[in-house]
Amino acid sequence: MALFVQQLINGLSLGSIYALIALGYTMVYGIVLLINFAHGDILMAGAYSGYYALMLLGVTPAGIACAFVFSMLVCACLGVTIERLAYRPLRSAPRLNALITAIAVSLIMQNAARVIPFIGPNPRQFPRPAVHNITIGAFSISNIQLIVIFVAALLMVALNYIVNKTRRGKAMRAVSFDMQAASLMGISVDATISFTFALGSVLAAAGGVLYAFAYPQISPTMGTMPGLKAFIAAVFGGIGSIPGAMLGGVLLGLAETFTKSFNSQYADAISFSILIIILLLKPTGIMGAKTKVKV
Image (cartoon, rainbow, N blue to C red; front, side, top):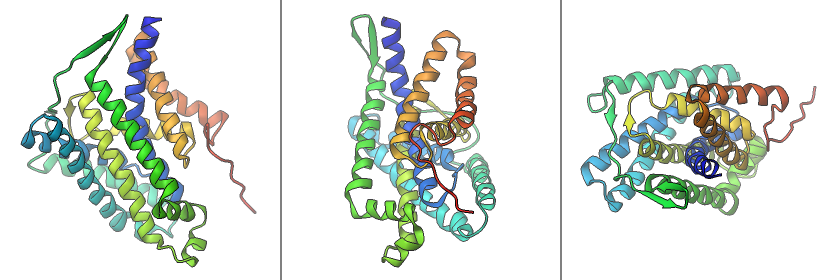
């Protein structure tokens, strides 16, 4: 029982990070039907932004808060720029064109990071608070896990409020339902899509800093595997569904953590096996809605 509870805590910590990243995938797909495979590299940019903020300000509560804010601002600008330059010109093109472009943007970002002097190809040690374990009975939770779970939960609540209670969130839901009708009702489609990319990039930036706290080594390719697993989480929960992305991220984190407790070599295999199984048995995901196509 103690082992189960301990792995449950570890899984919630990892799953919270996957959920934050998966939200960016699912929001963008829900509006423009695009799988933004460069999303994991925005996580990498967020981790490096947080790294330099912490190196400048120090690993203090104020420094950590500033690192989150700075990385979110950098990644929001980066996400909007990518949407404007790479995806908006292809909005009316076949989906395959945009998908190939997303893969190209991911490769460009990774290789550009290798040659940028203040990033470089070599891994860096990410500064983080000293790890302290809080023991409760037979299991323990670290201060890093508490930070990860708390910040992720706070951001998910904030996202839910923005999407459901604000004018911009209502515009996002309208554009995702019918882009042309929303445009006729006076909603700026371009501004709404840019806001969606910015919001998804903000969550990816926070996920990047949290991921670097949990696994304190950053590199230009660090976003590849978390990005792929967050995509699995989005598909698992139901691509296009915000609650589904949250649920899928947590469930994937739990599945991966419990697998590692038996054999760490099978953790990645389990994640990708879940993707295959969900596509075979329920392609819409756990909370995804079925769509009807008229012919």
